[in-house]
Image (cartoon, rainbow over all chains, first blue to last red; front, side, top):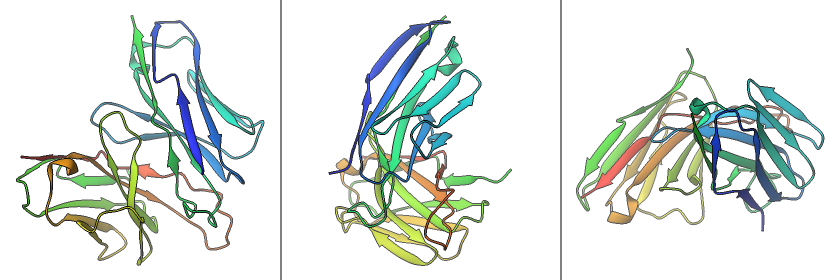
Length: 114
Length: 118
């Protein structure tokens, strides 16, 4: 069964303390992996798409990387405004049970204290 | 700016009283999705439209229905809401090519509708 697991469930950082969030997946024939940011009471905001192992994408203090079994979201020198839940989602092939629809992890809730 | 809009942002309904949530998009995307998200859980796909083709997830209760009258609008109808249907309902859109491989598949979400059932 295709699965997505994010760790840790919650992460508390001091402002400026760099760290990484993990997204591991068991999907054969991955089409793409997506990172989203979700603020409380709002819809997820698209951050990155990664398609193949070794690929990296960056946006401000965030950097996403992809291997064959997991993805990392690295946060460099975080600020309080980076506090949010970060969701990872994978797109399997269309011929599987999920018909190519995104499979989401439960997310990592990040809190950055000043 | 092109976007996904959901109305209302907050909806309170009574147990068993039908409710309709709406979603509109100015992105001109051909796929629209409805997700249900409960607190601290992953979004759960209810159904999606690929153009006019309706695709229901196997475990979506019959209580949930959807309509897509045109490319821009999509509605979620809950015929008889129960207490367990209280959640955030998210609408999302994406564009899917016709060639098979999809180079652009990220989904763009609206702000959500928070449904409370009393």
